[in-house]
Amino acid sequence: MKPTQPDSQGHYGPYGGMFVPETLMEPLNELTRVYKKLRRDPEFKKELQYYLREYVGRPTPLYRAERMGRELGTNIYLKREDLCHTGAHKINNSMGQILLAKRMGKRRIIAETGAGQHGVATATVCAMFGMECVVYMGKVDMERQALNVFRMESLGATVVPVTIGQQTLKEAVNEAMRDWVSNIRNTHYILGSALGSHPYPMMVRDFQSVIGREARKQILKAEGRLPSALIACVGGGSNAIGLFHPFIKDEGVRMVGVEAGGFGVGTGMHAARFAEDKIGILQGTKTYVLQDGDGQIALTHSISAGLDYAAVGPEHSLLRDLHRAEYSHVTDIEAVDGFDKLSQWEGILPALESSHAIAWIIKNAAQFTSDDLLVVNVSGRGDKDVQQIAEWKKERP
Image 1 (cartoon, helix red, strand yellow):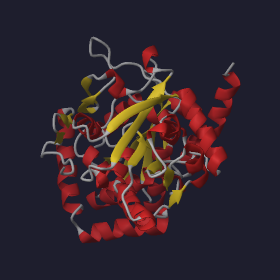
Image 2 (image 1 turned 90 degrees about the vertical axis):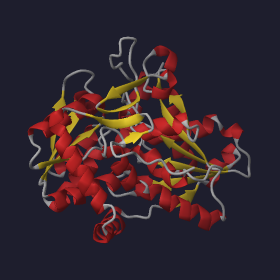
Image 3 (image 1 turned 120 degrees about the vertical axis):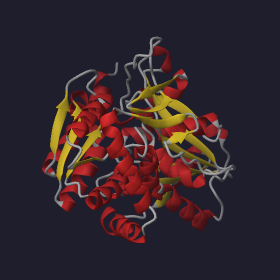
C-alpha cells in the first residue's frame, strides 16, 4: 500500500479539503506553495534537523518497558516524546512551522491550544526567534491546565481566554482563525494538530513523522524486526499520524489509535469520533465529526484537554476506511488507571493524553503474546496533569 498523500486540493480520498472563508484561500494557497518548495529544500531540512537535534533533543529514546512487559505478558517499547524539550511531541511541528514563518517574513505568530503543550511549544520557538506570540485557549482548559498557562506567559506569550461555547479546544481554534483572517499580512497561524484545512494535515504530519522514522530505525536496531503493533492516542491525531506514517506500507504492522471515551460512548459525553460514525465538516476539513441529528457540532468530554475535540484529522479517517488503521477508545477511569500503572511500573508519569494509549494496552493485553513487539507513543509527560488527577480522585466516591 502506498503512503496516503493528499491531492492538490488536500483531499485524502473523500476527506480533507479546504472548507474556509474566501479571505483565507489565498494565504492557504501561498502557504501550500511555500511549504511544497521548502519540504524539498536541503537548506531548510538541514536547519530543521539542526534545531531538532541541538534544541529539541532528538532523537528521543525508544525505551524497553521491561516491568510493564512482564506484567502484561508481551514486549513493550515506549517512544519517549515526553523527553522532548517542553515535554511533548508538539515542538516537532512548532519548530518546523516557525522556520517556515521566518522564511515567509511573518513576525507575528498565533496558535490554539487545548492541553497547553502546543501553546508552550509555540511560545518557546517564538521566544527563540524573537517573534510576537498570541495563544488562544478555552477558559475551561486554562483552569485545568493552569501550569501550562503560567509557562506560556513566562515565555512571553499572550494567552487569550476563550469564553464562548464549551470554552475548550474547538472554540480556541475558531478564535485563532478569526484572528488570522484579520491579520493575514504579518501573521502565521501555527496550527497544532493534523487537522484543519489543507495544507495543515499534510504539513503537521510531515513535521511529526520524525517520530515514526526514528522509531523504525530504533526497533530494527534493538530487535532486528518491525513491531507487531503501534499504539497512540488520537485527538486531532498528530502524534499518532507521526508514528504511523513511516509504517503505512508495512501491512504486517498493526496501527491502533485510541480516542477519548470520556464517561462512556453511551452517555454522549465523550470524544470518540469514530464510535459515532458520522461524517461532517468542521474548521476547514471534511472528516469524522461528533454531531447531532441536525448536523450541529455535539458537545464533547474528556478528562484530557488535548483529546477533547469534536473532529479527527482527515488522514486518520482515510486510514480507518481503508482498514489500514483501527481506532478504539478508553474511558476517563481507564485513562487514569493507565496513568497510575505506567507511573508505578516504570517511574514514568505520562500525560493524560498518552495515558489513553497505555490504558488500551492494559485493557487488550490478552490479544498479544510473548513474541509480539508493541511500540506505544508516550506523546507527553504528565507533570501538567498531576493536580487535575489529584482533584479528580478526591471527587471519586
